[in-house]
Length: 288
Image 1 (cartoon, rainbow, N blue to C red):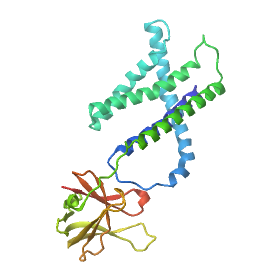
Image 2 (tube, one colour):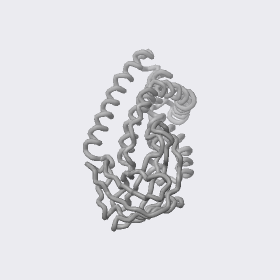
Image 3 (cartoon, rainbow, N blue to C red):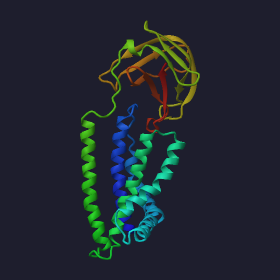
Image 4 (spheres, rainbow, N blue to C red):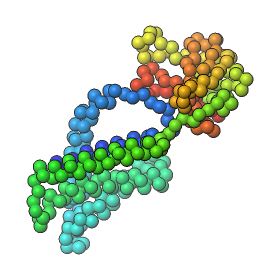
């Protein structure tokens, strides 16, 4: 039971990673650099996932199976399979509802989270239940693991293929193609910093953060506030990901970087990476 349940949970985790990747590609985010360390971390993440799957099996799935079996015998006189998803759906509703309320999630998001949690636990529980049925041909742990590996591989390959199709069809987010007339406007960092880009090419900065580095190999920036006037220019680049806004203000203690673009046509955003690009730390200005 433990082997079967953990194996199913690992398959679900892989499929969930593909689904989450597609969802992330649809969100309004700047293109983040690829982190090669994730490849090195895969074996450690797999081991941690297996340990977590074993913990979930012992502390959650096995009690759910016991509860479903007891309720089936008490109310219908037999252990029907549908008691497993019924008990799982009922048990996951309160914690998902609590998380949704604390996180101020909408009704649709709460329903999606509940359905995902209930399905994630019900599938390995049903697979583990198959090993306990007395009126079915017995299955060894090795046989069950082989079946899970086969069908799990097919499911993962299918999820990978659907991911590729979804991304190829253009479901992913692409920064808007902007011109100088749409870039012009007043931007803020949400704190005290503002940057005004006038249509005539004049730039006015007030307490905008700029970042200096002690050496080329240093990823620890020194932050300085920039206040002054200067000029700006829009560079369309070769595509939506390479367009930039170059701001030059000589009175700044540290020269401004070229700003990259994302957001929407109505609400563009400018950003620069802070420190090591692999850290994904951004300094963002949003147009008012």
